[in-house]
Structure formats: C-alpha cells, structure tokens
Length: 309
Image (tube, rainbow, N blue to C red; front, side, top):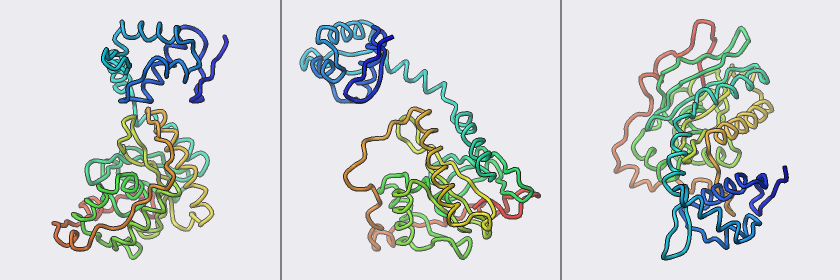
C-alpha cells in the first residue's frame, strides 16, 4: 500500500484510515494549540478538500472538536476516552521487565526498577545477575532521592523548582564516605546527569557497590521512576560505567516511548540545573533527614556481598 511522509517525518499509509490517523497524531502533537484545516493540509501533504473531509468526519464522531469562532480544530472527548483506555492498559513493570532482562543478558549485572513516591523511591522489580557474587535489593524498600544512581536519576529528571524544594526541606546525610552532602556538589552532579543522560554511583549509598541509572517517564511527562544496573564496585570500571550508562539510558528512553512519552524538541541550551537555591532560603526552611528507615537497614540478600548502590 502506498505510504505518505508528511513534513513531521512520520509515515502513514495513503488509505483513508491512515490519513485520519495522521490528522489525529498531528493534532495530538500540537495540543492544546488549535489548528486550522490549511495547516493540516500543508503539514500532511494532503489536498485541502481531503483534510477538511477527514476533520468533519472526526468531528462528527467526537474525536475532534471544532471552534466556530476561530475555525480551528483540536482533539475532542472521543480521543480523550481512547487515550485514557490506552493508559489503563499500560503495564509499566511488564514493559520495563523485558528491557531489564535484556540488560542483564548483555552485562551480566543486576537490573532494578524504582518507582517514585513523593520524596522517596521504592524498589518494585529486579532481574538478578547470573554471577554468584551479585547485587540484590529488597523489593518494597524505600530510599531517599539523594544517595545512589537510582535516586539521582529521578531527582535530575525533576524541574529545578522541585529539586530546590527537596534540597530546602531535606538534610543531605552521609551514608558512606562517598555520599554527596554538599548542595552545590549535588547540583553539579545533577547537571552531569542531565547532560549525559544517566546517573552514576560509586559507593554513595552502600560501600563497595556501583551503579548507573536513568529516569523513566510516563506519557504525561511525569517522572515514574528509574531503571538501573548495579553490581560490586570492583566489576564496574570507568569504561564499563560509561558503557553501562549508555545502555541504561537507551533502555529507559525505549521504555518511556513504549509508555507513550514523547520528548519535547531539544532546546538551544542544555536544561542543566542553574544553581543551588539561596543559602538564606535553605537555612530558613524546615529540613529533615533524607536517610529513611529503609536506607538504614541492610537490604541485601544472603547471597550478596554488598547491597544496591
């Protein structure tokens, strides 16, 4: 069947259904901005009459809403109902687990999945390394958003304002000699995470452990949590940390895409955090320790030499 390729680079079949899907996809990408029929026709390389006919049909079935005043279109309640049904069918853990298994097959190290819950994260899944000496985590254990790559990957993916709020209300407690306890140093580390696409930990949460992690986003853009690879620090050379970091970042991007996330176009300058919030503001805020009860407890299994990160 013939295939058309509009200006946005997407490819659709030239059938009526394929063209209608192309229109829906274009309106979704431009939402909440409303779009006129001329723009639809031009961007999708369609005759204006064809674009108008498709939009009329979609409007009649409530997939699209038409504004009489502006003569423009946007997605309607029918599209919302379909989108919500698709979201209900999304299985984050099942989707991520496939990528975790592949990561373990490639690297031989343990892969974990963490879910963000407010100002902490919780381990929800893991695929264990085949090595006799390997990392293992306690599923359901809660950890702060500072120490370890899984935590830093989540924190770095949040807007600057949320990072600043976290640092203003949580004390940076040393869990090992490698834990970052300076706000300025943590902001610098988060800049590196955003620039390279993954976080790195060398014994920050647990001495002798190393890990890399990248954030996972839902279709809404919300940070769901993070995907990580972890193992004994002596198996994670600088070269492998970079190699594994790229693998994890790529896997996290694929998971996010499968969950419906579509990243915004890259800005001219990087989105690195600017700087730590003013010292006076930090001193005036109520602060609490970031080291949770779960962080203080041993979380490794009997077969593990060191615990996660």
